[in-house]
Image (cartoon, rainbow, N blue to C red):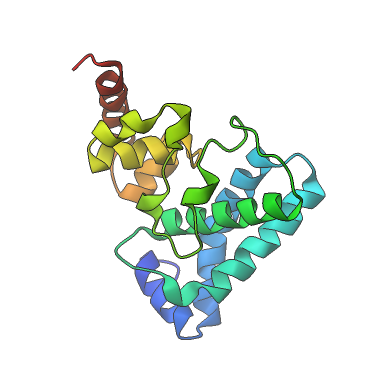
Length: 175
């Protein structure tokens, strides 16, 4: 079962296969925990939000759309759980801490719809192709490494780097 594609594992997990969940957890728990460690300071807080991510992942598993990579969907669940956590603390989220428009995110929103806040002068992202914008968002909003983006999109790291570089040239008006 550990060699099965993510989509097959999710299909099995949705129907109640606990082994499929164990494989998914083994594949992605480290990445989700690392993502949360970058956003939160206290280890106890990271552990708490990490548990909430997997509770939300479990409760929303039937909403998974297999046309999106599972890792990307997982990061959307993690990000919305993190935002819920910040909201519950009535914390003011700094732009550098979470550079996204909080009002643009909802629990049923698809990964490609979470965009950078227009009011911060980044509406220029609309001039990018869908692939460029998606990769830029994954890199700078989701805070994924080039390797993680490459895995999520089934592309090479070089291809990801080149696409993001071209996107920035386009933003700067160099092409």
